[in-house]
Image (tube, rainbow, N blue to C red; front, side, top):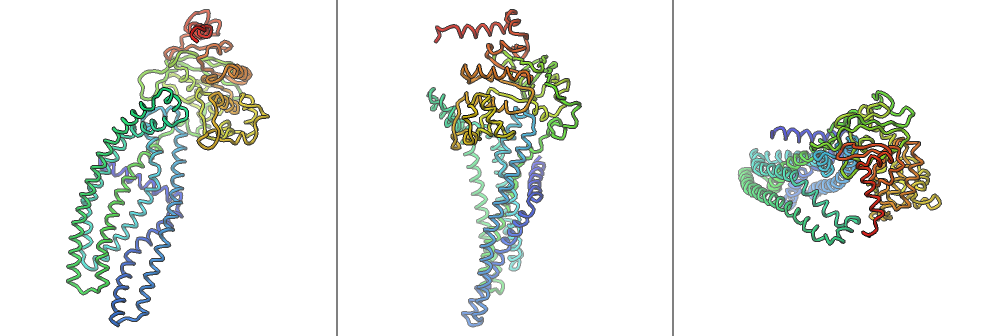
Length: 602
Protein backbone atom coordinates (compact mmCIF):
# COMPACT_ATOMS: atom_id res chain seq x y z
CA UNK A 1 0.00 0.00 0.00
CA UNK A 2 2.81 2.38 0.93
CA UNK A 3 4.67 1.62 -2.32
CA UNK A 4 1.46 2.32 -4.23
CA UNK A 5 1.14 5.74 -2.58
CA UNK A 6 4.78 6.54 -3.39
CA UNK A 7 4.23 5.48 -6.99
CA UNK A 8 1.11 7.64 -7.25
CA UNK A 9 3.00 10.65 -5.92
CA UNK A 10 5.88 10.03 -8.32
CA UNK A 11 3.38 9.77 -11.15
CA UNK A 12 1.83 13.09 -10.11
CA UNK A 13 5.27 14.73 -10.05
CA UNK A 14 6.18 13.49 -13.55
CA UNK A 15 2.71 14.52 -14.74
CA UNK A 16 3.40 18.10 -13.65
CA UNK A 17 6.85 18.02 -15.24
CA UNK A 18 5.29 16.82 -18.49
CA UNK A 19 2.77 19.69 -18.43
CA UNK A 20 5.55 22.23 -17.92
CA UNK A 21 7.79 20.89 -20.69
CA UNK A 22 4.94 20.48 -23.18
CA UNK A 23 3.34 23.86 -22.66
CA UNK A 24 6.28 26.10 -21.68
CA UNK A 25 9.42 24.44 -23.00
CA UNK A 26 11.44 27.62 -23.59
CA UNK A 27 10.70 29.09 -20.17
CA UNK A 28 11.38 25.76 -18.46
CA UNK A 29 14.72 25.21 -20.20
CA UNK A 30 15.78 28.80 -19.45
CA UNK A 31 15.09 28.23 -15.76
CA UNK A 32 16.98 24.90 -15.84
CA UNK A 33 20.05 26.60 -17.37
CA UNK A 34 20.04 29.42 -14.81
CA UNK A 35 19.56 26.88 -11.99
CA UNK A 36 22.53 24.84 -13.25
CA UNK A 37 24.76 27.91 -13.28
CA UNK A 38 23.61 28.82 -9.76
CA UNK A 39 24.30 25.31 -8.47
CA UNK A 40 27.87 25.25 -9.80
CA UNK A 41 28.69 28.71 -8.46
CA UNK A 42 29.28 27.70 -4.80
CA UNK A 43 32.02 25.15 -5.53
CA UNK A 44 33.63 27.50 -8.06
CA UNK A 45 33.43 30.32 -5.52
CA UNK A 46 35.05 28.18 -2.81
CA UNK A 47 37.87 27.16 -5.13
CA UNK A 48 38.55 30.71 -6.28
CA UNK A 49 38.33 31.93 -2.68
CA UNK A 50 41.04 29.46 -1.67
CA UNK A 51 43.20 30.87 -4.45
CA UNK A 52 42.49 34.41 -3.26
CA UNK A 53 43.69 33.48 0.24
CA UNK A 54 46.74 31.61 -1.04
CA UNK A 55 47.79 34.39 -3.45
CA UNK A 56 47.27 37.00 -0.74
CA UNK A 57 49.53 35.00 1.64
CA UNK A 58 52.06 34.52 -1.18
CA UNK A 59 52.03 38.22 -1.93
CA UNK A 60 52.66 39.07 1.74
CA UNK A 61 55.53 36.58 1.74
CA UNK A 62 56.85 38.06 -1.51
CA UNK A 63 56.34 34.95 -3.66
CA UNK A 64 53.49 36.33 -5.79
CA UNK A 65 53.08 39.48 -7.84
CA UNK A 66 50.31 42.04 -7.45
CA UNK A 67 49.10 41.12 -10.92
CA UNK A 68 48.56 37.49 -9.87
CA UNK A 69 46.65 38.62 -6.78
CA UNK A 70 44.56 41.01 -8.86
CA UNK A 71 43.68 38.24 -11.33
CA UNK A 72 42.16 35.93 -8.70
CA UNK A 73 40.37 38.89 -7.12
CA UNK A 74 38.93 39.74 -10.56
CA UNK A 75 37.77 36.14 -11.00
CA UNK A 76 36.06 36.26 -7.59
CA UNK A 77 34.39 39.57 -8.45
CA UNK A 78 33.27 38.24 -11.85
CA UNK A 79 31.76 35.14 -10.28
CA UNK A 80 29.97 37.32 -7.75
CA UNK A 81 28.59 39.50 -10.57
CA UNK A 82 27.37 36.47 -12.52
CA UNK A 83 25.53 35.16 -9.48
CA UNK A 84 23.92 38.57 -8.88
CA UNK A 85 22.66 38.52 -12.47
CA UNK A 86 21.51 34.90 -12.46
CA UNK A 87 19.55 35.07 -9.18
CA UNK A 88 17.07 37.82 -10.18
CA UNK A 89 16.86 36.44 -13.73
CA UNK A 90 15.94 33.01 -12.39
CA UNK A 91 13.40 34.56 -10.02
CA UNK A 92 11.83 36.59 -12.83
CA UNK A 93 11.57 33.59 -15.16
CA UNK A 94 10.19 31.46 -12.33
CA UNK A 95 7.52 34.05 -11.52
CA UNK A 96 6.37 34.19 -15.14
CA UNK A 97 6.25 30.39 -15.39
CA UNK A 98 4.38 30.09 -12.08
CA UNK A 99 1.71 32.53 -13.27
CA UNK A 100 1.35 30.61 -16.55
CA UNK A 101 1.07 27.27 -14.76
CA UNK A 102 -1.45 28.53 -12.23
CA UNK A 103 -3.54 29.94 -15.06
CA UNK A 104 -3.20 26.67 -17.02
CA UNK A 105 -4.35 24.46 -14.18
CA UNK A 106 -7.16 26.87 -13.24
CA UNK A 107 -8.44 26.78 -16.81
CA UNK A 108 -8.09 22.98 -16.89
CA UNK A 109 -10.13 22.64 -13.69
CA UNK A 110 -12.76 25.09 -14.95
CA UNK A 111 -13.04 23.21 -18.24
CA UNK A 112 -13.30 19.83 -16.53
CA UNK A 113 -15.89 21.10 -14.03
CA UNK A 114 -17.94 22.63 -16.85
CA UNK A 115 -18.05 19.22 -18.58
CA UNK A 116 -19.06 17.26 -15.51
CA UNK A 117 -22.80 16.53 -15.27
CA UNK A 118 -24.54 19.02 -13.00
CA UNK A 119 -25.78 16.17 -10.83
CA UNK A 120 -22.20 15.25 -9.94
CA UNK A 121 -21.92 18.51 -8.00
CA UNK A 122 -24.56 17.13 -5.63
CA UNK A 123 -22.10 14.40 -4.58
CA UNK A 124 -20.22 15.23 -1.38
CA UNK A 125 -17.20 13.20 -2.50
CA UNK A 126 -16.92 15.02 -5.83
CA UNK A 127 -17.57 18.37 -4.16
CA UNK A 128 -14.76 17.72 -1.68
CA UNK A 129 -12.42 16.70 -4.51
CA UNK A 130 -13.22 19.90 -6.37
CA UNK A 131 -12.65 21.96 -3.23
CA UNK A 132 -9.33 20.24 -2.52
CA UNK A 133 -8.25 20.69 -6.15
CA UNK A 134 -9.07 24.40 -6.16
CA UNK A 135 -7.41 24.84 -2.78
CA UNK A 136 -4.18 23.10 -3.81
CA UNK A 137 -3.77 24.20 -7.44
CA UNK A 138 -0.95 26.57 -6.46
CA UNK A 139 1.05 23.39 -5.74
CA UNK A 140 1.50 22.88 -9.50
CA UNK A 141 4.05 25.69 -9.98
CA UNK A 142 5.54 24.80 -6.60
CA UNK A 143 6.25 21.26 -7.82
CA UNK A 144 8.26 22.49 -10.78
CA UNK A 145 10.12 24.92 -8.51
CA UNK A 146 10.79 22.04 -6.11
CA UNK A 147 12.09 19.89 -9.00
CA UNK A 148 14.45 22.67 -10.11
CA UNK A 149 15.62 23.33 -6.56
CA UNK A 150 16.15 19.62 -5.99
CA UNK A 151 18.18 19.30 -9.18
CA UNK A 152 20.17 22.40 -8.34
CA UNK A 153 20.92 21.13 -4.84
CA UNK A 154 21.88 17.71 -6.18
CA UNK A 155 24.40 19.31 -8.55
CA UNK A 156 25.75 21.48 -5.74
CA UNK A 157 25.92 18.49 -3.38
CA UNK A 158 27.69 16.42 -6.03
CA UNK A 159 30.26 19.12 -6.68
CA UNK A 160 30.86 19.62 -2.94
CA UNK A 161 31.04 15.84 -2.40
CA UNK A 162 33.69 15.64 -5.12
CA UNK A 163 35.60 18.51 -3.52
CA UNK A 164 35.63 16.82 -0.10
CA UNK A 165 36.62 13.47 -1.60
CA UNK A 166 39.84 15.13 -2.75
CA UNK A 167 40.74 15.46 0.93
CA UNK A 168 39.07 12.33 2.38
CA UNK A 169 36.74 9.99 0.42
CA UNK A 170 34.73 9.23 3.59
CA UNK A 171 33.84 12.84 4.36
CA UNK A 172 30.99 12.98 1.83
CA UNK A 173 29.65 9.61 2.97
CA UNK A 174 29.58 10.79 6.59
CA UNK A 175 27.65 13.94 5.63
CA UNK A 176 25.01 11.85 3.90
CA UNK A 177 24.74 9.38 6.80
CA UNK A 178 23.95 12.02 9.40
CA UNK A 179 21.02 13.27 7.32
CA UNK A 180 19.13 9.94 7.26
CA UNK A 181 17.42 10.27 10.70
CA UNK A 182 16.09 13.66 9.70
CA UNK A 183 14.61 12.54 6.39
CA UNK A 184 12.89 9.51 7.96
CA UNK A 185 11.29 11.66 10.66
CA UNK A 186 10.35 14.32 8.12
CA UNK A 187 8.60 11.82 5.83
CA UNK A 188 6.63 10.49 8.79
CA UNK A 189 5.36 13.91 9.82
CA UNK A 190 4.45 14.84 6.22
CA UNK A 191 2.26 11.77 5.94
CA UNK A 192 0.54 12.56 9.23
CA UNK A 193 0.01 16.20 8.19
CA UNK A 194 -1.66 15.15 4.94
CA UNK A 195 -4.00 12.71 6.70
CA UNK A 196 -4.93 15.44 9.19
CA UNK A 197 -5.55 17.93 6.36
CA UNK A 198 -8.04 15.53 4.75
CA UNK A 199 -9.82 14.90 8.06
CA UNK A 200 -10.07 18.60 8.89
CA UNK A 201 -11.21 19.80 5.44
CA UNK A 202 -14.87 19.89 6.53
CA UNK A 203 -13.97 21.90 9.65
CA UNK A 204 -12.02 24.42 7.56
CA UNK A 205 -14.99 24.74 5.21
CA UNK A 206 -17.31 25.33 8.17
CA UNK A 207 -15.00 28.01 9.55
CA UNK A 208 -14.89 29.69 6.15
CA UNK A 209 -18.67 29.63 5.93
CA UNK A 210 -19.25 30.94 9.46
CA UNK A 211 -16.60 33.64 9.18
CA UNK A 212 -18.09 34.80 5.87
CA UNK A 213 -21.78 35.08 6.79
CA UNK A 214 -21.30 37.53 9.64
CA UNK A 215 -19.83 40.07 7.22
CA UNK A 216 -22.13 39.34 4.28
CA UNK A 217 -24.46 42.18 3.36
CA UNK A 218 -27.48 39.89 3.14
CA UNK A 219 -26.83 37.37 5.94
CA UNK A 220 -25.70 39.90 8.53
CA UNK A 221 -29.12 41.64 8.41
CA UNK A 222 -30.93 38.71 10.01
CA UNK A 223 -28.05 37.97 12.34
CA UNK A 224 -28.14 41.52 13.71
CA UNK A 225 -31.92 41.70 14.03
CA UNK A 226 -31.99 38.31 15.75
CA UNK A 227 -29.09 39.38 17.99
CA UNK A 228 -27.42 36.20 16.81
CA UNK A 229 -23.88 37.47 16.42
CA UNK A 230 -22.74 36.16 19.81
CA UNK A 231 -24.36 32.81 19.04
CA UNK A 232 -22.54 32.75 15.70
CA UNK A 233 -19.24 33.73 17.33
CA UNK A 234 -19.61 30.86 19.80
CA UNK A 235 -20.49 28.44 17.01
CA UNK A 236 -17.40 29.54 15.08
CA UNK A 237 -15.28 29.27 18.24
CA UNK A 238 -16.47 25.69 18.83
CA UNK A 239 -15.47 24.65 15.32
CA UNK A 240 -12.18 26.53 15.63
CA UNK A 241 -11.33 24.89 18.95
CA UNK A 242 -11.94 21.44 17.48
CA UNK A 243 -9.75 22.26 14.48
CA UNK A 244 -7.08 24.05 16.54
CA UNK A 245 -6.75 21.21 19.06
CA UNK A 246 -5.98 18.72 16.31
CA UNK A 247 -3.71 21.15 14.44
CA UNK A 248 -1.82 22.14 17.60
CA UNK A 249 -1.12 18.51 18.46
CA UNK A 250 0.20 17.89 14.97
CA UNK A 251 2.38 21.01 14.99
CA UNK A 252 3.83 19.96 18.38
CA UNK A 253 4.77 16.55 16.93
CA UNK A 254 6.33 18.31 13.95
CA UNK A 255 8.43 20.53 16.22
CA UNK A 256 9.64 17.56 18.32
CA UNK A 257 10.62 15.61 15.20
CA UNK A 258 12.43 18.60 13.72
CA UNK A 259 14.37 19.22 16.94
CA UNK A 260 15.32 15.53 17.13
CA UNK A 261 16.51 15.55 13.54
CA UNK A 262 18.36 18.81 14.08
CA UNK A 263 20.24 17.41 17.09
CA UNK A 264 21.31 14.39 15.03
CA UNK A 265 22.59 16.74 12.35
CA UNK A 266 24.50 18.85 14.89
CA UNK A 267 26.21 15.77 16.39
CA UNK A 268 27.06 14.56 12.93
CA UNK A 269 28.52 17.93 11.96
CA UNK A 270 30.93 17.81 14.90
CA UNK A 271 32.05 14.32 13.80
CA UNK A 272 32.53 15.40 10.18
CA UNK A 273 34.47 18.51 11.22
CA UNK A 274 36.76 16.34 13.34
CA UNK A 275 37.41 14.05 10.36
CA UNK A 276 38.21 17.10 8.25
CA UNK A 277 40.76 18.40 10.76
CA UNK A 278 42.41 14.96 10.90
CA UNK A 279 42.70 14.88 7.12
CA UNK A 280 44.17 18.38 7.06
CA UNK A 281 46.67 17.45 9.77
CA UNK A 282 47.78 14.34 7.86
CA UNK A 283 48.36 16.09 4.54
CA UNK A 284 50.12 19.05 3.05
CA UNK A 285 47.58 21.80 2.41
CA UNK A 286 47.69 25.53 2.03
CA UNK A 287 45.92 28.10 4.19
CA UNK A 288 43.40 28.69 1.41
CA UNK A 289 42.67 24.98 1.11
CA UNK A 290 42.06 24.74 4.86
CA UNK A 291 39.48 27.51 4.64
CA UNK A 292 37.97 25.91 1.52
CA UNK A 293 37.58 22.44 3.05
CA UNK A 294 36.10 23.66 6.33
CA UNK A 295 33.59 25.74 4.41
CA UNK A 296 32.97 22.82 2.04
CA UNK A 297 31.98 20.59 4.98
CA UNK A 298 29.35 23.13 6.02
CA UNK A 299 28.20 23.65 2.41
CA UNK A 300 27.98 19.90 1.76
CA UNK A 301 25.87 19.41 4.83
CA UNK A 302 23.67 22.31 3.80
CA UNK A 303 23.34 20.93 0.27
CA UNK A 304 22.57 17.42 1.56
CA UNK A 305 19.99 18.89 3.93
CA UNK A 306 18.37 20.80 1.05
CA UNK A 307 18.34 17.64 -1.11
CA UNK A 308 16.48 15.69 1.54
CA UNK A 309 14.16 18.59 2.26
CA UNK A 310 13.62 18.95 -1.48
CA UNK A 311 12.67 15.29 -1.80
CA UNK A 312 10.27 15.63 1.14
CA UNK A 313 8.81 18.84 -0.27
CA UNK A 314 8.42 17.28 -3.69
CA UNK A 315 6.60 14.24 -2.32
CA UNK A 316 4.43 16.49 -0.15
CA UNK A 317 3.43 18.58 -3.17
CA UNK A 318 2.84 15.38 -5.12
CA UNK A 319 0.47 14.19 -2.42
CA UNK A 320 -1.60 17.37 -2.63
CA UNK A 321 -1.60 17.32 -6.45
CA UNK A 322 -3.29 13.91 -6.37
CA UNK A 323 -6.59 15.70 -5.68
CA UNK A 324 -6.11 17.79 -8.85
CA UNK A 325 -5.38 14.66 -10.87
CA UNK A 326 -8.48 12.97 -9.44
CA UNK A 327 -10.62 15.81 -10.72
CA UNK A 328 -8.95 16.04 -14.14
CA UNK A 329 -9.21 12.25 -14.57
CA UNK A 330 -12.93 12.18 -13.77
CA UNK A 331 -14.76 10.54 -16.63
CA UNK A 332 -17.12 12.75 -18.59
CA UNK A 333 -20.19 10.82 -19.80
CA UNK A 334 -20.31 10.36 -23.54
CA UNK A 335 -23.43 12.47 -23.85
CA UNK A 336 -21.58 15.39 -22.20
CA UNK A 337 -18.86 15.38 -24.83
CA UNK A 338 -19.00 18.14 -27.40
CA UNK A 339 -17.94 15.61 -30.03
CA UNK A 340 -21.10 13.59 -29.46
CA UNK A 341 -23.35 15.92 -31.45
CA UNK A 342 -23.02 13.76 -34.56
CA UNK A 343 -24.02 10.66 -32.57
CA UNK A 344 -27.53 11.93 -31.83
CA UNK A 345 -30.06 9.47 -33.25
CA UNK A 346 -32.27 12.28 -34.55
CA UNK A 347 -32.46 16.07 -34.39
CA UNK A 348 -33.95 17.19 -31.10
CA UNK A 349 -36.03 20.03 -32.48
CA UNK A 350 -36.23 19.65 -36.26
CA UNK A 351 -37.77 23.11 -36.48
CA UNK A 352 -40.54 22.27 -34.01
CA UNK A 353 -41.42 23.47 -30.55
CA UNK A 354 -40.46 20.79 -28.02
CA UNK A 355 -42.86 18.22 -26.67
CA UNK A 356 -41.29 16.97 -23.45
CA UNK A 357 -42.44 13.59 -22.18
CA UNK A 358 -41.62 11.92 -18.85
CA UNK A 359 -42.06 8.15 -19.00
CA UNK A 360 -41.92 6.38 -15.62
CA UNK A 361 -39.29 8.83 -14.34
CA UNK A 362 -37.88 8.45 -10.82
CA UNK A 363 -34.91 10.23 -9.29
CA UNK A 364 -32.59 9.84 -6.30
CA UNK A 365 -29.99 12.37 -5.24
CA UNK A 366 -26.39 11.06 -4.98
CA UNK A 367 -25.82 9.32 -1.66
CA UNK A 368 -29.55 9.08 -0.89
CA UNK A 369 -31.58 5.89 -0.73
CA UNK A 370 -34.93 7.69 -0.94
CA UNK A 371 -36.54 8.78 -4.19
CA UNK A 372 -37.09 12.54 -4.50
CA UNK A 373 -39.70 11.86 -7.20
CA UNK A 374 -41.21 8.50 -8.15
CA UNK A 375 -42.87 7.14 -11.30
CA UNK A 376 -43.53 10.48 -12.98
CA UNK A 377 -45.51 10.38 -16.22
CA UNK A 378 -46.33 13.72 -17.82
CA UNK A 379 -46.18 15.60 -21.09
CA UNK A 380 -45.37 19.28 -21.64
CA UNK A 381 -47.23 20.35 -24.76
CA UNK A 382 -45.64 22.66 -27.34
CA UNK A 383 -46.68 26.28 -27.09
CA UNK A 384 -48.52 25.62 -23.83
CA UNK A 385 -47.90 26.65 -20.23
CA UNK A 386 -47.85 23.78 -17.75
CA UNK A 387 -47.88 24.71 -14.06
CA UNK A 388 -46.20 22.48 -11.51
CA UNK A 389 -47.56 23.00 -7.99
CA UNK A 390 -47.38 21.36 -4.59
CA UNK A 391 -46.20 21.92 -1.06
CA UNK A 392 -42.55 22.29 -0.06
CA UNK A 393 -40.29 19.30 -0.86
CA UNK A 394 -42.94 17.82 -3.15
CA UNK A 395 -40.36 17.43 -5.93
CA UNK A 396 -41.26 20.40 -8.15
CA UNK A 397 -37.74 21.81 -8.61
CA UNK A 398 -36.32 18.31 -9.10
CA UNK A 399 -38.68 17.67 -12.03
CA UNK A 400 -37.92 21.13 -13.44
CA UNK A 401 -34.16 20.47 -13.33
CA UNK A 402 -34.65 17.12 -15.03
CA UNK A 403 -36.71 18.77 -17.75
CA UNK A 404 -33.95 21.25 -18.58
CA UNK A 405 -31.33 18.49 -18.58
CA UNK A 406 -29.49 19.24 -15.33
CA UNK A 407 -30.47 15.97 -13.62
CA UNK A 408 -30.61 12.61 -15.44
CA UNK A 409 -33.41 10.27 -14.30
CA UNK A 410 -32.46 7.41 -12.01
CA UNK A 411 -35.23 5.36 -13.61
CA UNK A 412 -37.35 5.87 -16.70
CA UNK A 413 -36.63 8.28 -19.54
CA UNK A 414 -37.33 11.80 -20.74
CA UNK A 415 -38.15 12.35 -24.42
CA UNK A 416 -37.92 15.57 -26.41
CA UNK A 417 -39.95 15.27 -29.60
CA UNK A 418 -39.70 11.48 -29.15
CA UNK A 419 -35.89 11.60 -28.91
CA UNK A 420 -34.51 10.25 -25.58
CA UNK A 421 -32.76 13.13 -23.85
CA UNK A 422 -30.20 10.67 -22.47
CA UNK A 423 -28.99 9.85 -25.98
CA UNK A 424 -28.71 13.49 -27.04
CA UNK A 425 -25.96 15.98 -26.43
CA UNK A 426 -26.85 17.90 -23.26
CA UNK A 427 -25.17 21.07 -24.53
CA UNK A 428 -27.32 20.86 -27.66
CA UNK A 429 -30.46 20.70 -25.52
CA UNK A 430 -29.25 23.65 -23.42
CA UNK A 431 -29.24 25.74 -26.62
CA UNK A 432 -33.00 25.33 -26.80
CA UNK A 433 -33.74 26.04 -23.13
CA UNK A 434 -33.94 29.19 -21.10
CA UNK A 435 -34.63 29.34 -17.39
CA UNK A 436 -35.58 31.70 -14.63
CA UNK A 437 -34.70 30.14 -11.29
CA UNK A 438 -36.11 31.32 -7.99
CA UNK A 439 -32.55 32.06 -6.92
CA UNK A 440 -31.13 33.41 -10.19
CA UNK A 441 -27.40 33.96 -9.88
CA UNK A 442 -26.19 37.44 -9.06
CA UNK A 443 -22.82 38.03 -10.71
CA UNK A 444 -20.42 40.79 -9.65
CA UNK A 445 -20.20 41.82 -13.31
CA UNK A 446 -21.64 44.63 -15.41
CA UNK A 447 -25.36 44.87 -16.05
CA UNK A 448 -24.81 43.91 -19.70
CA UNK A 449 -22.67 40.91 -18.73
CA UNK A 450 -25.25 39.79 -16.17
CA UNK A 451 -27.92 39.73 -18.87
CA UNK A 452 -25.95 38.30 -21.79
CA UNK A 453 -23.51 35.94 -20.02
CA UNK A 454 -21.23 36.12 -23.04
CA UNK A 455 -23.96 35.83 -25.69
CA UNK A 456 -25.55 38.45 -27.94
CA UNK A 457 -24.91 42.20 -28.18
CA UNK A 458 -25.51 45.24 -25.99
CA UNK A 459 -28.41 46.32 -28.19
CA UNK A 460 -30.19 43.13 -27.13
CA UNK A 461 -29.71 44.10 -23.48
CA UNK A 462 -31.57 47.39 -23.83
CA UNK A 463 -34.55 45.65 -25.43
CA UNK A 464 -34.84 42.79 -22.94
CA UNK A 465 -34.31 45.01 -19.89
CA UNK A 466 -37.17 47.16 -21.17
CA UNK A 467 -39.35 44.09 -21.76
CA UNK A 468 -38.49 42.72 -18.32
CA UNK A 469 -39.54 45.97 -16.68
CA UNK A 470 -36.10 46.77 -15.32
CA UNK A 471 -35.99 50.20 -16.98
CA UNK A 472 -37.22 51.83 -20.18
CA UNK A 473 -34.99 52.01 -23.24
CA UNK A 474 -34.67 55.77 -22.78
CA UNK A 475 -33.27 55.28 -19.25
CA UNK A 476 -30.59 52.77 -20.28
CA UNK A 477 -27.30 54.13 -21.60
CA UNK A 478 -23.70 52.95 -21.96
CA UNK A 479 -22.86 53.89 -18.37
CA UNK A 480 -25.82 51.90 -17.07
CA UNK A 481 -24.81 48.82 -19.02
CA UNK A 482 -21.16 49.00 -17.92
CA UNK A 483 -21.84 49.53 -14.21
CA UNK A 484 -20.70 46.71 -11.92
CA UNK A 485 -23.62 45.24 -9.96
CA UNK A 486 -21.72 44.91 -6.70
CA UNK A 487 -20.67 47.43 -4.08
CA UNK A 488 -17.83 45.09 -3.25
CA UNK A 489 -16.16 46.08 -6.53
CA UNK A 490 -17.13 49.75 -6.50
CA UNK A 491 -20.46 49.37 -8.27
CA UNK A 492 -24.11 49.54 -7.27
CA UNK A 493 -26.37 47.14 -5.39
CA UNK A 494 -29.75 46.01 -6.75
CA UNK A 495 -32.86 45.12 -4.78
CA UNK A 496 -34.26 41.60 -4.81
CA UNK A 497 -36.99 42.65 -7.25
CA UNK A 498 -34.47 44.30 -9.57
CA UNK A 499 -32.33 41.19 -9.58
CA UNK A 500 -35.42 39.14 -10.45
CA UNK A 501 -35.98 41.43 -13.45
CA UNK A 502 -32.33 41.05 -14.47
CA UNK A 503 -32.85 37.28 -14.33
CA UNK A 504 -35.97 37.59 -16.49
CA UNK A 505 -34.06 39.79 -18.95
CA UNK A 506 -31.33 37.13 -19.04
CA UNK A 507 -33.94 34.53 -19.96
CA UNK A 508 -35.55 36.80 -22.57
CA UNK A 509 -32.16 37.50 -24.18
CA UNK A 510 -31.41 33.79 -24.63
CA UNK A 511 -32.70 31.99 -27.66
CA UNK A 512 -34.75 28.95 -26.75
CA UNK A 513 -38.10 27.28 -27.30
CA UNK A 514 -38.39 25.65 -23.86
CA UNK A 515 -38.88 28.10 -21.00
CA UNK A 516 -38.65 26.87 -17.40
CA UNK A 517 -39.64 29.26 -14.61
CA UNK A 518 -39.07 28.30 -10.98
CA UNK A 519 -41.05 30.67 -8.71
CA UNK A 520 -40.56 33.57 -11.17
CA UNK A 521 -42.67 36.05 -9.22
CA UNK A 522 -40.81 35.70 -5.91
CA UNK A 523 -39.53 39.08 -4.64
CA UNK A 524 -41.78 41.00 -7.07
CA UNK A 525 -44.39 43.54 -6.03
CA UNK A 526 -48.00 42.99 -7.25
CA UNK A 527 -47.68 45.31 -10.25
CA UNK A 528 -44.37 43.77 -11.34
CA UNK A 529 -45.86 40.30 -10.84
CA UNK A 530 -48.84 41.20 -13.04
CA UNK A 531 -46.55 42.62 -15.73
CA UNK A 532 -44.39 39.49 -15.58
CA UNK A 533 -47.34 37.19 -16.22
CA UNK A 534 -48.56 39.39 -19.07
CA UNK A 535 -45.10 39.06 -20.62
CA UNK A 536 -45.16 35.29 -20.12
CA UNK A 537 -48.56 35.13 -21.77
CA UNK A 538 -47.08 36.83 -24.85
CA UNK A 539 -44.27 34.27 -24.94
CA UNK A 540 -46.42 31.15 -24.56
CA UNK A 541 -47.17 30.74 -28.25
CA UNK A 542 -43.44 30.78 -29.04
CA UNK A 543 -42.28 28.32 -26.38
CA UNK A 544 -43.14 25.27 -24.35
CA UNK A 545 -43.33 26.59 -20.80
CA UNK A 546 -42.96 24.84 -17.45
CA UNK A 547 -44.02 27.04 -14.57
CA UNK A 548 -43.13 26.04 -10.97
CA UNK A 549 -44.91 28.09 -8.32
CA UNK A 550 -46.44 28.22 -4.84
CA UNK A 551 -48.72 31.12 -5.79
CA UNK A 552 -51.73 29.24 -7.08
CA UNK A 553 -53.50 32.41 -8.23
CA UNK A 554 -50.90 32.54 -11.00
CA UNK A 555 -51.94 29.10 -12.27
CA UNK A 556 -55.54 30.01 -13.12
CA UNK A 557 -54.71 30.73 -16.76
CA UNK A 558 -52.25 27.84 -17.15
CA UNK A 559 -53.09 25.40 -19.93
CA UNK A 560 -52.43 22.44 -17.65
CA UNK A 561 -51.72 22.06 -13.95
CA UNK A 562 -49.82 19.15 -12.36
CA UNK A 563 -50.08 18.68 -8.59
CA UNK A 564 -47.27 16.92 -6.70
CA UNK A 565 -47.24 15.45 -3.22
CA UNK A 566 -44.27 13.57 -1.70
CA UNK A 567 -42.62 13.17 -5.10
CA UNK A 568 -45.67 11.75 -6.90
CA UNK A 569 -48.30 13.21 -9.22
CA UNK A 570 -51.64 13.06 -7.43
CA UNK A 571 -53.73 15.38 -9.63
CA UNK A 572 -53.59 17.08 -12.99
CA UNK A 573 -55.95 19.09 -15.16
CA UNK A 574 -57.15 22.65 -15.72
CA UNK A 575 -57.92 25.01 -12.86
CA UNK A 576 -61.70 24.57 -12.99
CA UNK A 577 -61.42 20.79 -13.14
CA UNK A 578 -59.11 20.64 -10.16
CA UNK A 579 -61.31 22.97 -8.12
CA UNK A 580 -64.33 20.75 -8.78
CA UNK A 581 -62.44 17.63 -7.76
CA UNK A 582 -61.79 19.24 -4.35
CA UNK A 583 -58.39 17.61 -3.92
CA UNK A 584 -55.08 18.99 -2.65
CA UNK A 585 -54.99 21.72 -5.31
CA UNK A 586 -58.41 23.04 -4.28
CA UNK A 587 -57.43 22.91 -0.61
CA UNK A 588 -54.22 24.88 -1.20
CA UNK A 589 -55.94 27.35 -3.50
CA UNK A 590 -58.78 28.04 -1.05
CA UNK A 591 -56.29 28.34 1.79
CA UNK A 592 -54.32 31.03 -0.07
CA UNK A 593 -57.53 32.87 -1.00
CA UNK A 594 -58.72 32.81 2.61
CA UNK A 595 -55.39 34.16 3.83
CA UNK A 596 -55.67 37.07 1.40
CA UNK A 597 -59.24 37.81 2.49
CA UNK A 598 -58.64 37.40 6.21
CA UNK A 599 -57.59 40.73 7.68
CA UNK A 600 -57.76 40.08 11.40
CA UNK A 601 -54.19 38.73 11.52
CA UNK A 602 -52.69 41.99 10.19
